[in-house]
Length: 163
Ligand SMILES: Nc1ncnc2c1ncn2[C@@H]1O[C@H](COP(=O)(O)OP(=O)(O)OP(=O)(O)O)[C@@H](O)[C@H]1O
Ligand SMILES: Nc1nc2c(c(=O)[nH]1)N=C(CO)CN2
Image (cartoon, rainbow, N blue to C red; front, side, top):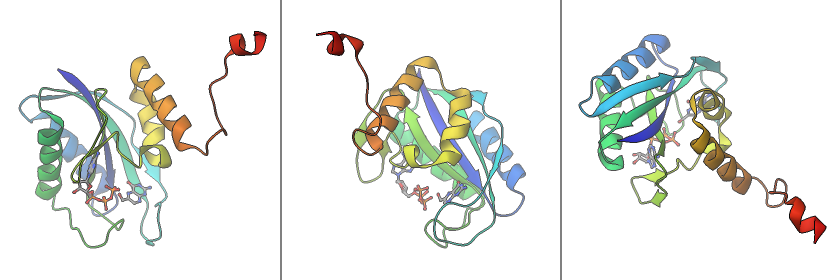
């Protein structure tokens, strides 16, 4: 059983209903159980496309699906909720991103873990903070540190100074 973090976003139609439906479909998926949910946040659109505000949320699942199968299920849920892929970074009825899957690091054309934009998106980081466990929090802190401009945030060791 692996813990995975899923980011949800919606800014078309009945946004709250779309998020709610997506979480329900996720929980109804065999070998997937939703174990924690953040609050729902209303957020200003990030990116160059002028569009309406989003609702964003992060949920935690426990799953026996592998990352690829879980991503496929996220795409199926998007399709079931009539997500329209009109513009990249444009409005959507619901968007599901696989943010973190256990401690897996991987990069392939279909799937990058942790999600490559995780550290750049406050609409993901804020709800993620609410639901993240200690081990993953340390991991994400490291990810953020390495994403930020080199040297701007760095680990400090007192021992080093005493030498
Ligand atoms: N961790 C991940 N979670 C979700 N999709 C991913 C991930 N890594 C790679 N992808 C790939 O990204 C592709 C584009 O995703 P999508 O259509 O949702 O893009 P977008 O919503 O316009 O942008 P973004 O994914 O950055 O929010 C998907 O087809 C998927 O294969
Ligand atoms: N606030 C907010 N802005 C966005 C979002 C989102 O979920 N929330 N998703 C986007 C495309 O993935 C582009 N911009």
